[in-house]
Image 1 (cartoon, helix red, strand yellow):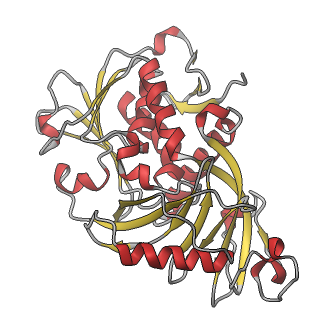
Image 2 (cartoon, one colour; image 1 turned 90 degrees about the vertical axis):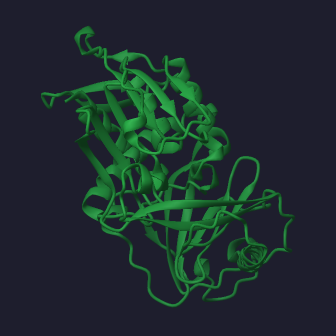
Length: 358
């Protein structure tokens, strides 16, 4: 198995490597830590931070009401793209670091990570290729690919009704596999997971933990008393695999639409509205299935499941910083990733580890 290394920072600024494939250490013995760390939250942010810390020999425990696939992360389409998160000057470097790690994890089938072509479209305007996407190989799509001109080959046409678009090969994390992989890897490294735990505030975390990592997502509104967080509600529909659909299709202008093929099914989406409502709306499901089916030019597929998650968007930007609890313990906040939790996960985990090591 190929070693997958991620560069972290020591407290003196020098890098050390970590084998992300099997958890083995690539560092000298004196870097082993004896601190006890509690992570609040078990979505992709909490699990990724847990792996990063436990594999560096921190005694790490995760506490959450819900774990992995039961969290907002479980409702994500989870195709790599820095969506609905800010500020760009921080988000893009975190995203690119995560991109590198996920590319390597895609070499390991059991991770649930794969590489996929994603096609980003707009219906009415000329799409702009982001500067960061050009070195990754982004290419403007032809008028045939966007559906400006009809062609006889429906497989090529795909039924698109878009004005412009670009394509990019990116990691796709199948949440039905990847979240379980992270949890298993964390446990293998000696971590503990405590489910069905709810804190009213971070001070309630047992005082035996020297460091608290706040990965509570939208829950940080109460835990960290952060009024800048707002829930961006996303509803998706899980349908059977679509024959011939080997790439992801995303259209950001209204109505938001995406079709993301996964290992065993396909994710249709979606919504992005400010709302706390976690109940699936039948009318929204009907609209999503109709829009995606129309774009793909297929008969409406059977609905396997509906999922709703609350993207933790923070109006003042992702919060990733070290602070102190009233009792003097270290707390590292890592939340507000919006719709880019998977996309930012390893980049943010690197900084969390650095702050926890100070």
